[in-house]
Length: 395
Image (cartoon, rainbow, N blue to C red; front, side, top):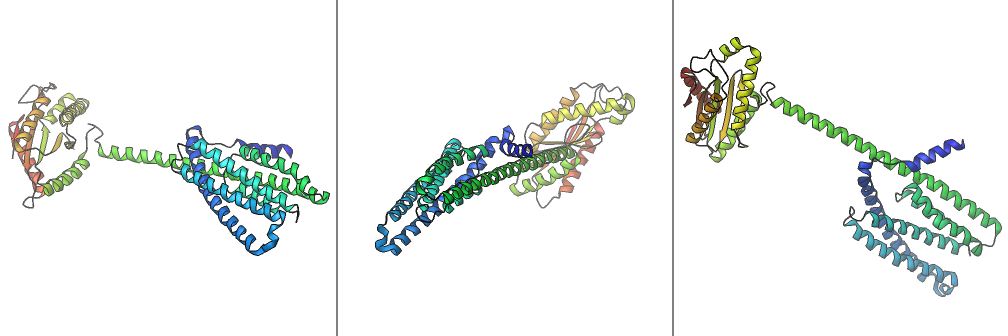
């Protein structure tokens, strides 16, 4: 039984978060303790001011009693100390991440001070009622309000409790009451410390669970982004697929129409690709498609340029902010670069190498022309280019 209790306490004391999250956890705890510290300070200020007012207004001449003077002095001191701590909490709150150690030191000293003050009140109470209610309540309140590491709180408790036990006999002469106060205060302390240990363990478990959920969500987001990217890429050539082309041409059409920007569409077809594929094999055909698409993609260096596989051996290039002459020049560069690849094609009637035919159409989109007509016109220009092969034709 003893070993089970020991293991339970050890689990509470040794509970911790992952090293990579320790700083974040510490900041989280400091935020909680600062907020609760401010609330506690304000609460004590209000309560002690009210107590002083009641003491002055109800006791009259009896206020001159020695014990009342002690109580009034204790209340006044606590008000002043709470004001100082409140100001420190407000200042530290402005930069929690930079004042981690300072917040811990202030929080520990604040808590110890409250325990000492409440212990002092209970010592004064020994002169009249013999109760330790104030000190006992403070022990419980410290266990359930701030969040401290179990070992830290235990040391704080002992720093206050041992002097309290030592001083009680000087204020309480009844051995029966003295024994009861010893037992009750120590019992309250042990139970309160266990409660605090459980709260700290739960805080760590909640934090770890939130991090696990966050990591899973981040992982899921990365997977979704990867899947989204894969859904946009043609698996063979590595450039954008037809889906992206359809979305892009629609978006660019609307944008260019709104701002009166020139929009060009280049439709591209590999000359005699069927003959190449049938003669050299599908693997060579796939390799050819990859090389051509790489040339087209590397030539479109602007972020607004979009190169996509339109279907089979056809490609499409969407260009914005480019006048007709510039678009024609760009298309001619594409034609030359593909021919410079020098991919052998003995079954082409226009060259000994792979070549492409290009149809281009440039307009400033308006209500006079639909996007379907725009694509169709560029495709018709490609059809004309394919009559000659290895040529650029503008509509």
